[in-house]
Image (cartoon, rainbow, N blue to C red; front, side):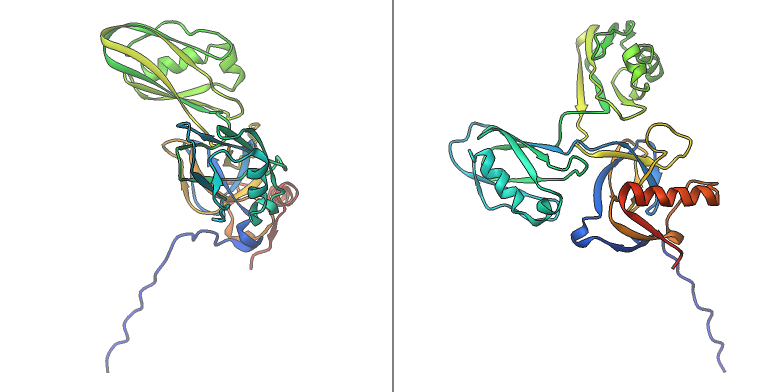
Length: 326
């Protein structure tokens, strides 16, 4: 008689949305967010809103076309009919509001200049949306208002000496920084400026003498730096580029002791998201859903009373109902 083999036990990680009991039709419970830099979280983690989405997206047409069409597609894959290169703002607005998902969010208003730039704004400014453009003509698409929590300072050429300075949006200037200043030195110089202090300070990463990534510690305002060069060497130059947040709201892991917005429970991370290398787009459950308490993740050490309070906040802030373990 043979010996019955010992069965293998297979395990798997958290599946996307595994914690969901129900959500609104058409994935209307889900939203695109930006997860705070340096965080690496698993699906089901409770989040707090750091900054609200601006509910604005801009469609800019470049190249001065004289004919042709383009199509706009919403976040659920529904598309407008072909739109003329110089479609009026009223007709673009009507085409967008005919899409079921846009209508379900309360609709949009379109302003701007026909054939050049169209600004699409959600009627309900608590709701953000994502559009994409399929060009049949020269179309440059920009998502969101150019607002950023991150800028990159790049040193070009081969500097061998000299200095540079950085100026913030209030016109305040850092002390002179060596061509090969460390990231710590750049951060220290910026964090002495009153306007930067008012933003909550910045962190700087990157490579000394090459590129510096400047990120606000609290994503509540626009970071607008300019650079001035006194570098020497082989064609040394310095440039500042901006990372567009795409109009997305930003979130971070729920932390009840914080004061940056992440202390207020608003969202639940739909699937694993790794923002270790910088702000990372993710999907969250942001509204009108039921979730299984046994499969969502509260802050470490949360008391029974705090868990009840978090559950209440999710319901009040976002219409997310936490059901007892099922």
